[in-house]
Length: 317
Length: 209
Image (cartoon, chains in turn orange, brown):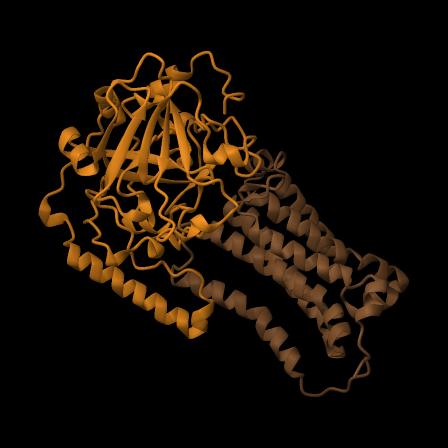
């Protein structure tokens, strides 16, 4: 994979964290006051205090390998689909504020020779996470550019030694009903589950992320640890993973159980395969106003297209 | 209809303040950058919900007047319906002009096979003649056909709920996904329609006070 050429920024150019946070507080306060003049109770969804979390210093000028700027930390941490908390994307950060993400254990089991439970601290020590700047393309036709900190899932899978029968990997999100009010909803078949074909899981682009913007991975973005598969729609990149199981059969996933005609197992970003609801041909990058064309495999075709050689992607959507 | 010019009633004030308030709130949110990280989508979704709320309120006037005997409610359904049309028009305008920047090729490509957009377009097209014929002079000239045309007001909210149900993530057949809000609207609308059935009406109606 080509590594992006990132120009280094002299420390003097970087806004100190305190200044940067104060500035945001000021803007937010101004917004709150102006809003409450109209009618405070009616102003919907003021972004809730991401600032109570230590926001890592933004890295101005950083881009992905296509030259697109990073999405703002505040947007990444305050505009999130995480239905275990709430279906309101702006409400997740507040509800997840006290969610414990450390210590965090991940159980790896199933068709492997060395099943094992790892703590995230273990994993970080073993696999030395690095920054990966990836585009995230939500099936709802919005997208971001996110500087994750993570390590290839392949490293972990190789260490547990999948058996010859292992063909798929199943992932499961934590269920903590006391801390995750959304789990009360009977409208979703909890727990959240996702899956990958083994060769997809072993691809170098597939990472387990433990950090964001050089800092910790906030609870609302899937901390303790989450999957990131940048060439697939965002819902494949399951958050708060506690179980990783190697299986022989294609695992069932939450969204394909709800609406199999809309959410396939593969869910590769594909502008040519339509969705009954959202345009998959174009998308809105958060922070921009114009739509942009969605790229095949979210711009990672060169790296991943070979995984699907000979497959009818309209059928295996 | 033989009201002399006089001070507007409390209900009237409420209707008109309530009619413009959401627009003021949306504008304030837009100006203070409080429309989420995805402001265009937020505007689309919020104007849509607000439009539906006003259509439902308009639909509720007659049954509520019947249940409570408060006859003034019947005279407010026109304004409420027109506010519904206002927000529906904003909803449609934002979709075409801001979301898609009037790129009709892109709109056509994205729209033709999306039943939720087609249902939404149908609902709006049905609303237009109702809004136009709400003008008093036209109403008078149309006579009986006005009443027939305006029976569409019973159908449109259901079409809008269909649009809403198809626009959220989920599966109606399995009752799974984000269906709660649109289904609640649907239930309310059905109740409001059932209350118009003559037999039901006879059971619940109170004498005008």
